[in-house]
Image (cartoon, rainbow, N blue to C red):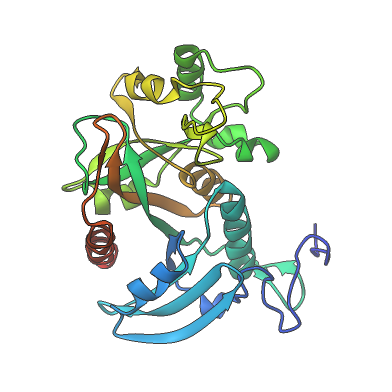
Length: 290
């Protein structure tokens, strides 16, 4: 379309993209996304200066400098539905002229790195270790709503997963998308690399049961046992597949690095959650700006 209508691209009165309340000049080429809005200030306090701040609903943004490099930190909230908002709106802010509602003639590509917490699905991955997601395996179904998503999908992994698990036919197709090789190279040393499974919820979709029984109560065991060549599923969380899928469709480079706060196989939980997150932040800032 030559001009994006108001019903498709919603802007504020100040001509900022609606939910995240941002314009292109507010956003650095390197963007860190975090689930917890309070984690934004935890990261930006390490900056040498903060040039811009805004917040709307759960979306808090700080842009500033670290190691001489401009970085934006943005909170997404929890879940693939929020990633859908953030990725589409980040792309709109940097690639659409918000005054004319027309696509910019030159595409701007962002480095988008998610820093999060996660549960390990392999016994050899220790609590407080860092897992870098080589792929996002989407149990959430989000990418299935987008035309031509198959061009970024890793079909052999998806089909092997369906066969291995006896995936229920009423559940969404488990799409799989690869991370940016360029960003993986920055985060590879001293970390654990593997497929991250992304769930659309915290309880039943991750095999947890309180008063409601899960449709696939042995899902975690099947995830742990999955192998395809060198690939295995290392951890479970709620954002990576949507980040990778939308990022690749929109031509951005994406990566997730998660600190392991629980090992679901060994039933272990971190003794110091706050320090685990601090280590992830400090190491990731250094890797991203090296």
